[in-house]
Image 1 (cartoon, helix red, strand yellow):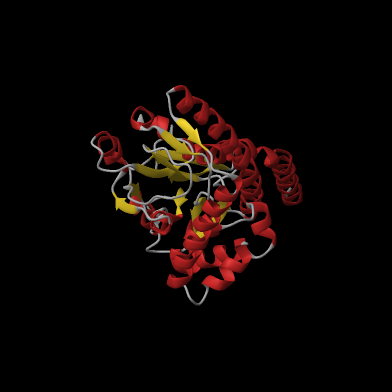
Image 2 (cartoon, rainbow, N blue to C red; image 1 turned 45 degrees about the vertical axis):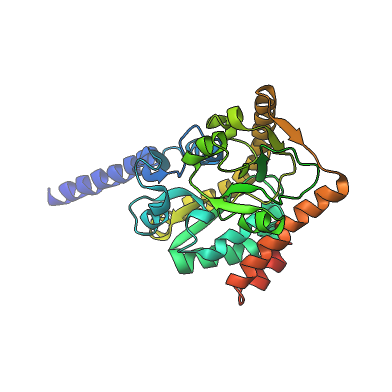
Length: 329
């Protein structure tokens, strides 16, 4: 009798193992949720790559990973977002290097790159930036989502210029434009974006520096007469993930995120081109005239932007700066 009972127990145990093996593939680990924020509102075009990233994660890692968008500066102030990421308050951000220069000042070199993101991944620049971000910020530099080169920024003016000469003119600037304005004989005036509209109306400044697109989002086309239609620099935006969060992710999820990062960089290039074309049509319709210099003057203008930008960068980073510059050009 004991023998029969023992046999029955063995058979039941075997059956349990068979059932477990049969239904194991249907069991799924709980979906991981990462909290994300952006420095600009959801509708601003530079924020687009973050939401494309969110979409690609949902498509390719659905059930395993989800990016939950919490909001923008109303959740964490713009200039504190990197610290929020570093400290684990959030897991992922769309980071603008010019907003976290205090933590990773070398990141601003991306402004002056002449090589697209795909090339920067091949020549060692990406790996160097990834190491610097990890060492100084405890974050993973996943993808450069600025959207290509020589297309990020331009200058806007209320005086018609026939050549790159800003003598006697005052331009509202952020740090991105200061050296260019000074090199062309102008006076840089640092002010927040919220002051630009009234400053133009009152003649406090004669122009301003801004991204290639986006002035229509703020209504500045109403008080802007000209756009110097020669873009320069690369946008300094990237997808950044808290390193502690990253290390906790399953290996297959990390591998897929790496692949998504590469695809996102390629997508961003075409996305920015479309946005710029649409924005140009919008501001021209509103009465803004596009200024184009002669070929020689345009070349001089663009080269001045890069020469002065690099000079300031190398002054601040005499040790690692030359290596970064060599990889960027």
